[in-house]
Length: 181
Ligand SMILES: Cc1cc2nc3c(=O)[nH]c(=O)nc-3n(C[C@H](O)[C@H](O)[C@H](O)COP(=O)(O)O)c2cc1C
Image (cartoon, rainbow, N blue to C red):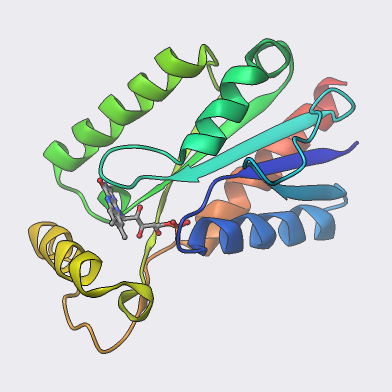
């Protein structure tokens, strides 16, 4: 059984999470390919794979455009096979109902635009990489983080992801698919 992960990532955290997930899947006995979505990337054909995971992060209420375009282009295949979505965001790091509603709205927009309905969605808390942001992005993130009770000290970066939950999600998904084959 083979798994494909395709991701969109702006600062690299979602890419890192996807490689982590691929390692976890590999260790569990499910060989996994990881590919970026993007105009310069190979558009991986999900057809030959038994299970597909798409992942993207929220930036000002939107997922990465190349990943949205990929999901839209492949929605018929994705709807026809086991395919799940990992949504990475700062909103998922907290318990604020307003943030979670915002996340659900973004997800609903994503599903509407792509015409793909993921079988399951995992919300992963993202990272705050102050060192990678330019002045304006750092200011914006400080504001977004402060609103959500997240760290605003810009001299360091923060990884808010629950890796055990991510591992659990992807391996449980793959196990379920393998049992249903
Ligand atoms: C400019 C900017 C805008 C963001 N906007 C949102 C947002 O609207 N909602 C949210 O929950 N998180 C938001 N985030 C947090 C990102 O989703 C989080 O940092 C994530 O880890 C980024 O993943 P990436 O490194 O794969 O791009 C934003 C981050 C940045 C830098």
